[in-house]
Image (cartoon, rainbow, N blue to C red; front, side, top):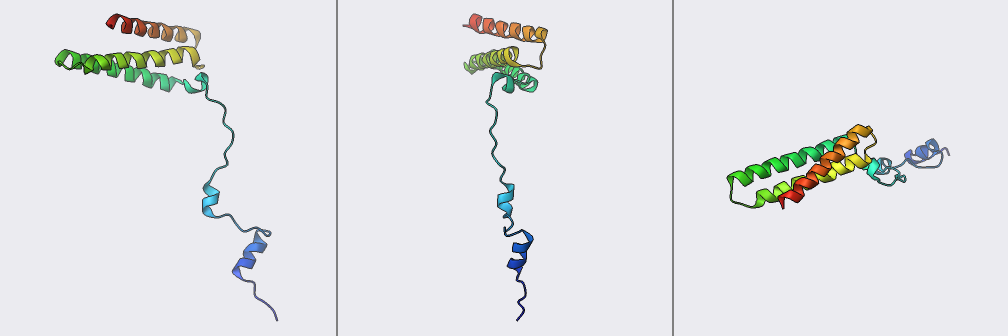
Length: 122
């Protein structure tokens, strides 16, 4: 008596004894070891640009709030903006490999002016 191959048996022969992976198993990626995060890998030009833009926006809004309101949150926004600007400028001046030496020097000078600004505002 001749047996017809069932659907499961065809699959088994087609995949050489292994059933095909389920769709959810195919979407899961293999985890590979990642290089450790360093200042050089984190500090990129767009991140520095966003950090400095956020700092300038916070400082500008803080000045507007300080001028037109009696609420002390404006001064806190100015300090926060200057601190974010210092961190992003220092990180860019120390760790960004895409900048040349003069650009790094300029960013470090900007960071020193932000520290001076924070010190004189107290």
